[in-house]
Length: 478
Image (cartoon, rainbow, N blue to C red; front, top):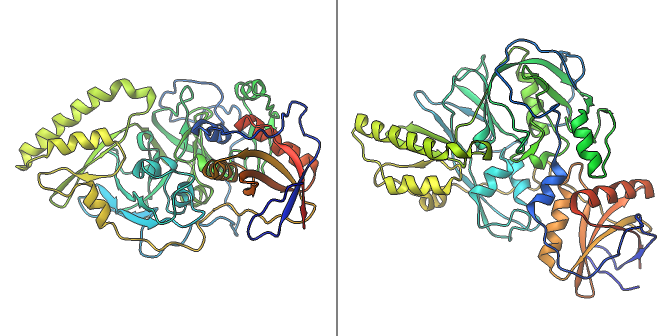
């Protein structure tokens, strides 16, 4: 067998065993493209019953596809806590008097092994936030030394500051606690994908559940069965439950705000309509809200706010469902800006407004004449110290002699191998993976696994989500 070297391991031999699938064709030495859609496929989940056009619901509806409502408190000891950060606000902000904008921009330098999703989660950002703000950086394989912009400034939606306001356009939730006037908690969210859109409207939280079981709707069971990935009628609490540890049931029939076992889908349209938060964020929100808390779901891609004597504009690309409203909404925005400029006696930089609308990256930018532009904002953003370990960052165990592994793929390009490794490590639940060099090529190895049954289950997930046939192998350390 050929030796495979990887620091800090001593030399390894990977002995291929009988394939887990009769259809496996082995490991051709080939270049593979790893489109974003493959990652998203591995992050799909959902709890809504059928595609529907929801109406505003304020009364308690009958329950379908979810356990009976309970109001329960989380355990006294909780495992998930939000990361502690010094000198930078990420999730809780003070709203200055007569202001509609909070937070500030920051930057962080990439180190070996970082990914943008890990950085995003640590600082309370979603995949959409960090990738739109850093379009020149590869999300899964950023180069060490690159400076990542942390878009931690937000314009508050144009909605009553009461209870929960969820803006689908930027996939972000704002919670205004009744006992903390002048404060806002904001969290990135994952929302319904096209065809399963999260509904607009006003409703309330009608029930709170710890460790919810997921009664899988027939439509979702059919969808998974067609992919060769059958689901049980009920998914019990645990690592395979897409609802996570906490769920808030809404007055909209069959819709929830919940945690997730796929945290790297936050900031994406990947659910069947429900709203998912990072596990550490839903835990905090769950303890803060009560049944009866109002919830308003809106779609506002363009928002403006004054900060002192400066006017800011934040722009997002409308979601596909509302793409037809883009031009009318922009026309309405420009009319509003002209009216504001006349009333305040200020001059708007209309060229800058056009650039912001085209950019649609969600970064609030001043738009008055002679105001600071994006490059200067980025340059002025303070540098945040790199933590020793990002919160929730997947930890990949070392391989030992006789470990069972999966030989997933073989690449001539190291970056492509690194990309697949990062995607596997960030699946939900995580698939531990690493790359090893072998005769000038790069193998992607997943594992270790306790037994063939566990390895077979993971190989099935890889087949479903990435369309790759993985082969069972065993590690021999020389």
